[in-house]
Image (cartoon, rainbow, N blue to C red; front, side, top):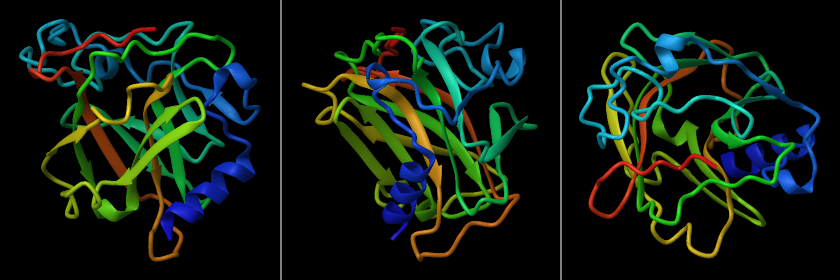
Length: 217
């Protein structure tokens, strides 16, 4: 049920992954939430995640012309998590969603993901995994699964859950424009409450051998 709710919410907001199809007017570009959250000095850039990142990404990705952070329709606010990473706090709209890694809606750039086999990240949340959707957005195609669908039903609000998602069968033949989008919604059909949240850190796209891949457009 949450897939239908989320699809309706996104359609109503006029949100599009396909940047080449035109800018979605309700997208709000967010500046770096905080330099020490998104890009740490000891981020482990180009080290395959061995650098002990406490930031949103393992690699030192910068938000620039092509690499964007989007909040969809103002549905959440952000804060630094006390353990590192980024906390996304739902507003009062009954759902929340956005993208940590989206190509700009006014460019034809796409992510370089031909060597990517998996995405890895850590998450904390005060909602269960069936209320958190991971989305890979491609031109004319969307891969969307709840974390519960992927085997992560129970999420902790006090300790990090390490998540790995196999993308090896999703990327070939597709142009990736959103490498990590998410929606918080309730698959029982109820709306999520204002103040419910997820925190994410150590996002890393890796190849079949587990080595970090630079996906910069």
